[in-house]
Image 1 (cartoon, rainbow, N blue to C red):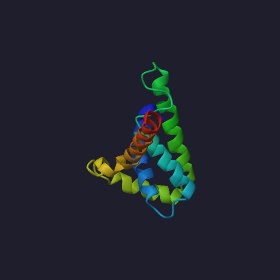
Image 2 (cartoon, rainbow, N blue to C red):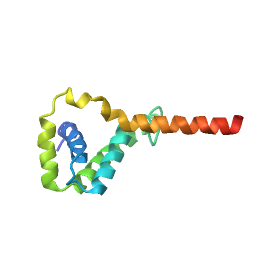
Image 3 (cartoon, helix red, strand yellow):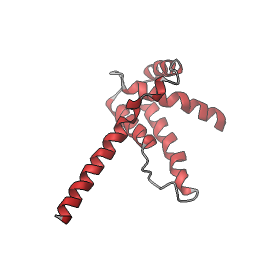
Length: 124
């Protein structure tokens, strides 16, 4: 499979993973890894910051496909195939829903709260 085919496959695999998160048949470990993958993909915080030449984007190029493929391996084949079919029928509007960003918003709010508490602790 060439790079263009892999990129196209990711465009359907990522929404399929999100759909699999919502299914009760999906194992807990797969859901946890899927959630971690989605959070990492949407998070502005990277393992290696993007401003570092070459290496900044290297973690995204390696880690995200690795997380995605591991998640897919943990989801039973028949469930994932069903999720892929559902993902292909999604419209562009379906993929732009605000609640996709909810886990990141929660992480940022918790981080902000902790920083404010630390600031208050040290400066009051």
